[in-house]
Image 1 (spheres, rainbow, N blue to C red):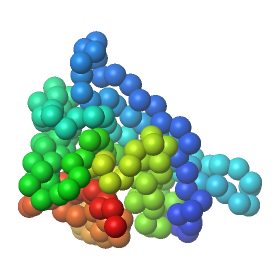
Image 2: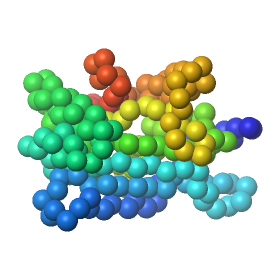
Image 3: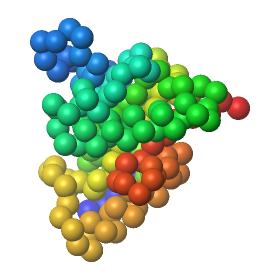
Image 4: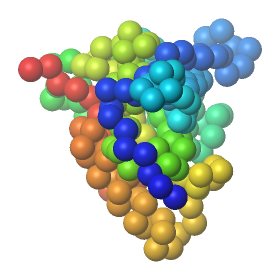
Length: 191
């Protein structure tokens, strides 16, 4: 497949859908989904190249996210548990405590658009559309290579190579691995 080189400045998220997860009005987590678009200069319009989805917790400094995520999925629990640990760790050392937590479950980019290292820009665009400050928003995700038609890659050489590339992308985007687990995180620090 021929890859299309993407200038990150042409990547956009215009709309984000946010929804309740159930009937409970006190639920802490909301699901979100956003389409990832690129401005195609040749055509002169936006083209959908993927999507990002996950969970978001607004004003959640006093809440144990893992308890809220436990009923949603194993993946949500893994991300929320790490987010809780990261926030406790930051409480000891950071001047700013994150008030919003973004648990990114999936970033899916169509195969021909992959390889341009745009994941960090996608996250930044998402925060901008939601009007969230990067210095007070903890972003947590688990890099996981996906097949073009969806679904996680099985263990093997193809997945190993794809995962290594994906991890490099997240390092370039300012993410770091949390302890020895599968979760990566980012919280921008104001200069």
